[in-house]
Length: 401
Image (cartoon, rainbow, N blue to C red; front, side, top):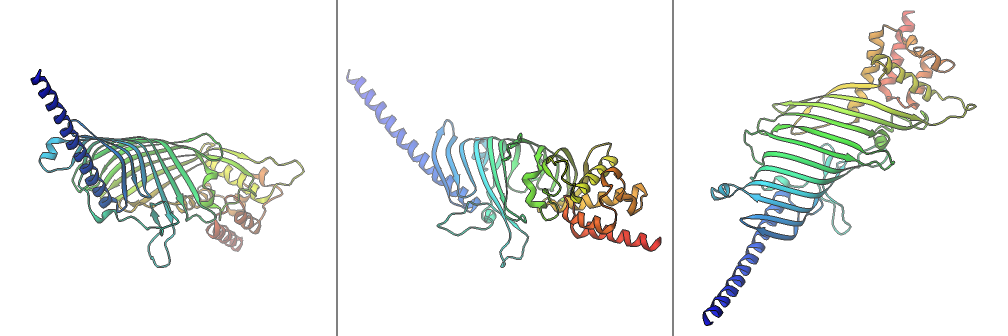
């Protein structure tokens, strides 16, 4: 009987000792992990709860990187052989319900660089931070398999001309394999899909992305597809050269796809933009058709005539992998080029172009002055570039005649 008591007491002491050791390890690991993440992101990091699962698997609950991301749940399975050899390598990382907040702001007067992306959530009690110093301490890490489930990205762009543009991508699922955070000649593969909810109540957009990247050689290949884009949601980007009200455009839906290929840091993206649907505001029979509306119809007909009845825009984007750039100016330039191509390929004179969709333009735009004014006021008024093109063309033709 006494032996049983001793065994019982020994077990209790062992359990208590292991509990203390476990608690110590959890606290120590939690502190070390938070410190490493703070060094990597240059931001305050908090971990709500950390659990240690045999043999050395970790579970993190409510991980928050201040102003950047909040993650509901993280599961980490390290590679023990790599750990024993001094390498920080993870076999599996599972991230559930991450919420990322990022903003793009115009540079201040003291900053002479292009507009930067600021990853933070502004707070009243502290100044807004600029681009995080992620590179202060390089975290050398290998992740063999990374999966993100039910992610969300909230992006606010303060650089648009008329007002802020807010884009939300939710239901994000990401699969990534063989990721190295330091230079090594290894290709990692990825695929991503997500949803784009629109405030207008339109059906959600859908985004798909898959491909591979070699960060060491700066080579890549990826295919991007975005369906059911609510073009009205991005109106602040093109409000200075488009007037939706005068063109009587109520809704417009776009599809976008791109084949992205990169070699030695040089990226070439073959882009395809298609107008999938357009809804015009109802006009009463007695209300006259404005010139901007007639110009919109004319340009749409020109595009359809060039693309078997479809309104599509194909263009190539050239940029750098380590400094990718893309904006609505790329689309604007491609559109201007398409109009010039329509005139060149058709062999029409400028006045012929004005009369191309004759029934729609009868009684409307009949000369260069009218066209210029309509272009500036209308939905496809492309600013001074388009204006100058038609004015020069008309002047040249007039002198030849």
